[in-house]
Amino acid sequence: MVYLIEENAIQLAHYRSEVERLEKRQRQLEELFDQLRVKTGENLDDEDKVSDDKGEND
Image 1: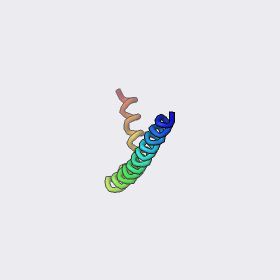
Image 2: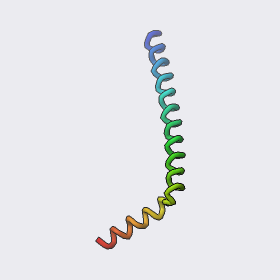
Image 3: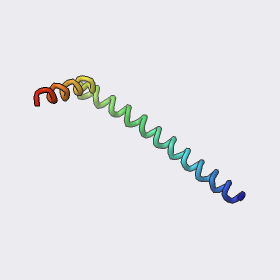
Image 4: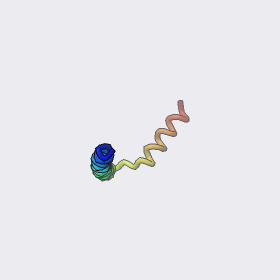
């Protein structure tokens, strides 16, 4: 029984570490995406409006 508890604690620590790593990567990607939008002058809201207009014309 003790072995299972220890194994569970090890797995939990691993999953927490993985979640933290993925959250950090997500923040990095969001920052890069924002930088790209600034550099290209694109605004996601404007892009959505364009795709909506195309849908109405089809």
